[in-house]
Image (cartoon, helix red, strand yellow):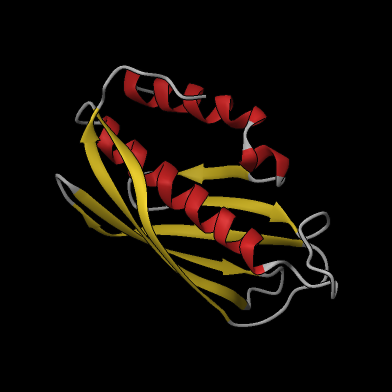
Length: 143
């Protein structure tokens, strides 16, 4: 693992006290071409017992933002989500959903990622697109 990847792994570990950890989100795989994470349905349901659409959005933004941040870090920059669009295709009542973030465009000032969320049967639950602004780091930590 390079120094940059070690730094990125440490940043992922810092998420344990933030929203992703409270939702049960775990990053399980990452490389330059995709980032994969999981989230339990239990604890993330809406009143009708289905996975909350907002929970799918949190999973999508988390994975897309981490992927964008990893690309930005290679150039000493940071990534901040500026637009998220989600289409919810089907309901899920139990189990674990998996999100896969893949880059659509990785640029100097903007990066966009598609995040596909599927259920345990591999059926598409949600399709999301996240655009992140890529900026110079100010050195401030906001955890």
